[in-house]
Image (cartoon, rainbow, N blue to C red; front, side, top):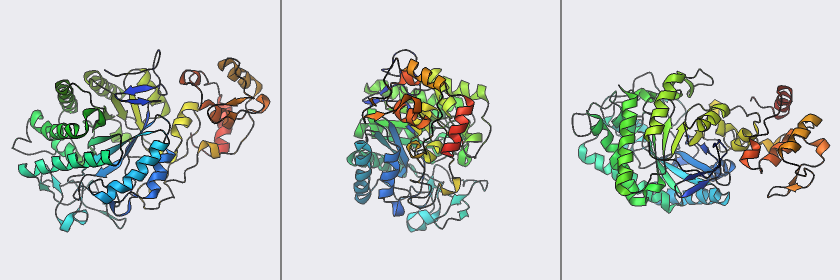
Length: 466
């Protein structure tokens, strides 16, 4: 089961032991396509982006990274299948490690969610099926326009083994580049999900039909990759309840449990745990693709996710539309060991700090998600420490702060950087945020005493949206 070093009830900011990795908190950078790797090569902008979001003992998962030259379905996404890519990733991984973070590379093949423009020689994309994605969905083209998904070509059985080998080679390359581990992207309607979901997979051979057959491709990849780099360096992502890119299934819970059962059995057979299982919440369907939206059925989400969490024998990570409150609740209720954040991390490079001190959040700009600009909408979102200072912690709040800290001298140097909160009578919200970032998590949990009026003032200073 899940391992943790924290005392008492864990929180989103409690330490966590994920196999060989000691995490200082449970906020994870979710994998997100950003389209900044020109011609498939990770550039210096990626190093800046990932180091901005690094914290000592924090876990980052990269954007989907191509396992082969047939894997792309977006412009300018990075690869990990040739030497130039491996060498470029080394610089990024080294920069992240210098900040004390742990970084996994997400291995990705989009399958039929591609276009001939992205395929060698203009060939048809590969998949489990020859059925195209419906016109409900559009593909982002290299020129910024949106096109229709073409008809894919169903893989022959002999070709499936070649794709498994591509995953294995990509995993080895990732370790060569210095990554701490890899995540197998088996979610969101991409290639592996196209085998798992019976709404897509119409095969009549050993890879289609029954649940066991539909899980076979994923498990062959897991076994091959774990055998090459070690199971404790392998994470798996799935989304049994998500219909992104027409990835529908007749029974999401049964599919999720079938995958979990096979992962558990594999772990027992080899006597080692995988790094984690990463599952996307059902609310991603209604909430994750929009600027704002309603959550899915709370009962449905809770039942599906709790059932999978209780069944899986290892670290369980959740993602999909999480807010601070939902993340805190998921960990407190035992529904997740780790919580990955996507869009909130795009616009808040210091998201861990902001969540910890309950500071307002920068608004993300959706139109810059998939551009090629190495700065705008990528590395130019402000940190909390860049906000203007203001002195509006009142005497009562200062008194509460001193009480929580047990008489700690706020005038003295604090934290590893020797930061001082200056005169107690002039403690600002920003001072407190920077100071609190160096405090133990159990003390942080006691400092939720900022009232609505103070938060409103803080929002005005930071220009955030909360």
